[in-house]
Length: 501
Image (cartoon, rainbow, N blue to C red; front, side, top):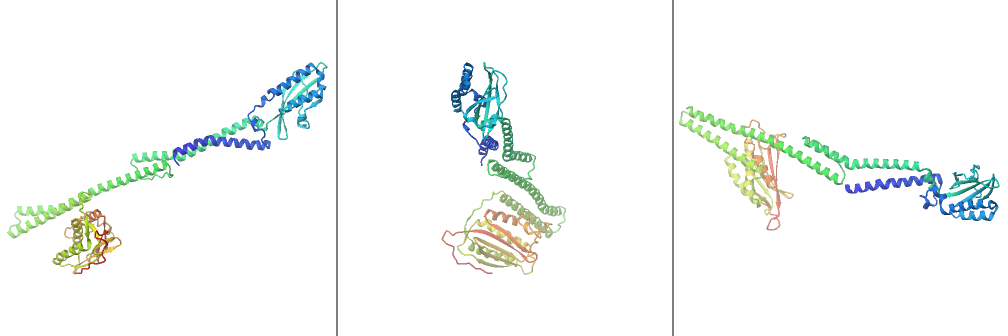
């Protein structure tokens, strides 16, 4: 539900709810005190003006004038009957008392013992006053008295009783109570709605304000959960997403900073070692330590090897930096992987023979199966893996095993060696730059620590994967995964290529 709808409904409720409650309370009180509601159309008629209506006022003045002109008319039953019938049309009746004797009672008041019980005594000539309200059954009667004296010295009282609507009487009688209830209902309703709106609108906004303050102060280690699906809930979700992304960005920035420091430290260490060696041999040449042609040649060859080592390190650093910044374009093209790996395995076989390393090749992949490859970069990945395996081979009988097969919708290239293996705690880190399990960073037992990091960057650029499995002392397996694509020549062939050396 939107905030606009909530506000509209809340304002409508602030008007309608108190009104409905007031009407309900009034109805319940009327029913409790009166038993029924009659003549609802007269609800708002003022009770004070009942005796001022034309028909009642006219009848009263006519009776008073006639009696004063002809006092004997009080004994004329026909006259009194006519007046009574005229007043009865407006729900009014009268009682005529002469001295202490009642001489006439209107038909509609006969049998009303409650009225007779409240007849006041005569006061004085010309005295007028209101009479107490009398309840007769479910009806209320209000009265007014007129005292007058005649020439015969009789003391007369003319008492007029008018039936009043119970609801009108109730409204008049209990107006202070109704007004107080109205105020209480309005206050409680507004308080409840204000609390509700505070919880659904104001409180979430205050939470967002506090969250913004904490972010401004650099504190991002918290969560914003406003709940709800309205605009504020969506705003809170967007704010939480912004906070999370900002926290990740700062963490990534810190990681980059830590990596930069590590990079500088690693580069400094890896470059310092060959530079120190070069300086030592150059100083040896300058100081005449190499006093024979053979020793001079050995010094120069060592200097050349160290310089070549530095050049290779710089090339790897440059390549890794470009890969890390996504500045190496990949010339991806459809390649039938089975044939590509067969050719590469043939070339690798001759290279490994020179190092007395055996290789077994098993290619079990449909000949038509294609993957998207940058041939040169993928060769670099394979070369880095082989080079890394060769550095850590410690068995007399050195072996490599190459497997190419299909696994679901991916082609897998697996290279397994029988070298020293990798410790379980080191295995998750081998694709990090400059990471080497052997912490001394001796170039005789390891390289720069960039080979596998470069391989991972290249595989990420291919949309593939690379992972390692190893058992310490038994060997390591590197698995490369590449998404298969449908061959442009049709369905993949079921023919398989199998080579063994």
